[in-house]
Image (cartoon, rainbow, N blue to C red; front, top):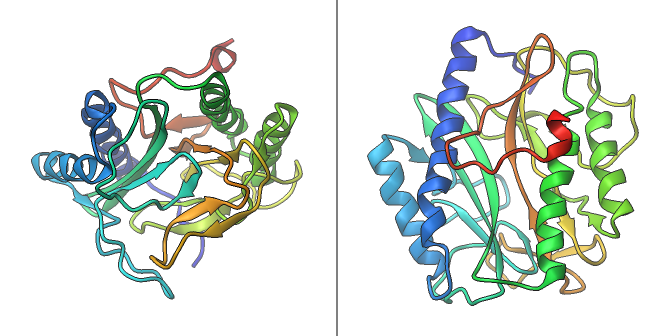
Length: 267
């Protein structure tokens, strides 16, 4: 599969899908507190998508070698790196959870995730969540025509490692459009000036998974999906879908409730 470049109509479709995905997270935000189960979060998201007229990209999603994914979103708690399947275990005060939503609207995919702190948590967990958000934005601000994918990965890796964290290697960002996963792969580590050149009309996710401990991960149990840190350390992730514009970038997964960019972005 080669990279697809979106025209004006495609960009508008992607803006709509991206905003709607973010609005699902807005809707969920007040509900994510101690006592709620991740299955209840999933059910709330499914209701929200129904009202929007969107469908979940994850429900029934089955890439080669995987069982069908059984839920409308992913909920990755504490040491779960990604692809956590919603279940009946209540969230407790101090947990951190990534909620990853991908919706389909008129054939276009909007993909985004946010971290939520349940109640209050440790200073170390809060620092991981906040600095992972900053790491994503360090990658985003590299995006402009003529830059390269390696610039994004390098910026994220340098920032994360400088702060004592590690970057997961096995999972990466990806092109997105009329398909859930398109070219290119967007690594969250690397060397500046390497890999694919960015051109206007490209749309892809930047979604670093950052661990408080070592970078190694493993599959948990036998559900075929859940990935955890090998050393049981906490992991955090944030995700936006990005458009390469003629002059820089546009974040397509923004909504009224999206956290604001860090101060350095507009500084």
